[in-house]
Image (cartoon, rainbow, N blue to C red; front, side):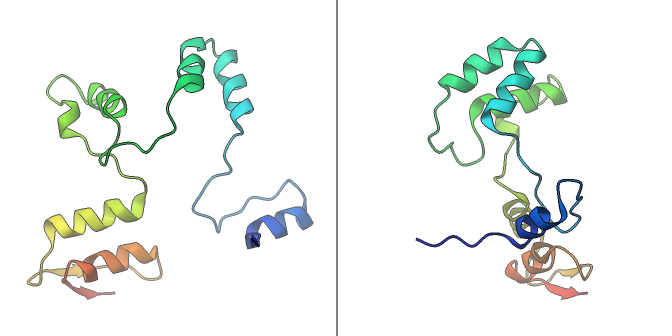
Amino acid sequence: MSYIEPWSKKHKKVAGSAVYSLSNSFVEPLTNEQLIELSLERGDQQIVDEFRHHSLAYTPSGGSLDLRQVIANFYGPDISADNIVVFPGGQVALQTAAAAVLDNKSHAIVFSPGYQSVQQAPVQATSQITT
């Protein structure tokens, strides 16, 4: 199996570590060890224990119940976990929102250049678009 190294990683190696990439839509993640160290430094042994014993199986569509409960608690007592949907990324969230509010009688105005999913979500929802 062959893996292709992303463009940004190649150039980061050449330029050194003091490079700030404004072209990526993702952050450089912490390693598991760094995440555990950071949590322990903050005195959060409970979250480290939960991390070490947490299942790596797929979560239910819409997000795991524990995550949705934490988010609902953030918004207050009138919101329950049943009112919360968690998406695996921006693209799915945009497509879902477009499908919920747009139809073939709708007209969406989208900016260009920009995130391609912002432009494609209204098209997939059968809406007319202006860029």
